Length: 202
Picture 1 (tube, helix red, strand yellow):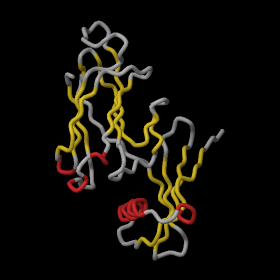
Picture 2 (cartoon, rainbow, N blue to C red):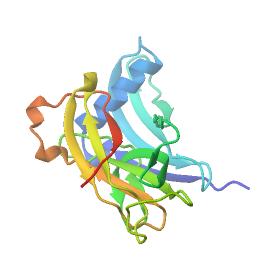
Picture 3 (cartoon, rainbow, N blue to C red):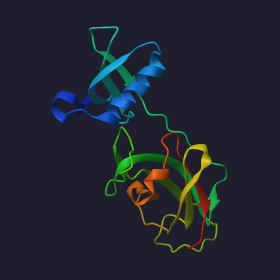
Picture 4 (cartoon, rainbow, N blue to C red):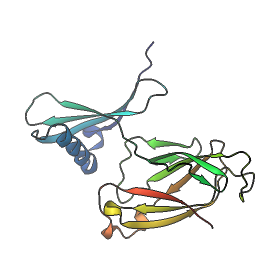
């Protein structure tokens, strides 16, 4: 039995021209076929092959070499490294994910494309578990420890430092969001950004 979900996210003839999405599509095309010449992005769609499958993104674009639109199926690659045992004040870090448009009620990311510009707030979601029998200074009603975030831009340049207090979540999650609009955007660089999670005290 198939249960495929297909949703349109962007359509050029309805939403208008988008420079950020066009640049993203052109970059993806260059990785797929270097000799191809990008003309225009037509649409972006999201697809899930089943309920627990990750989102995949379909970029439909026009290229000079063909009268038929080219479609690229893209899946985000989430890169994280947790140094074992990753225990902070009685809590073990289980996973790290990043995205945009966080839904704090459901504790999931709605922005499946995860494109960030200078007005965005990229968010990192941590999932913790309490280590049984290990002492902690954290109140028993909380599900995560005090930590410190180091946001780094390209070339490992330190952009911002944040401190997070223990959070109460039924999923054991904790969030850090960087509001890019509050920073000096003239010094921000596009490219691969990273975040380092460290033990911290408030």
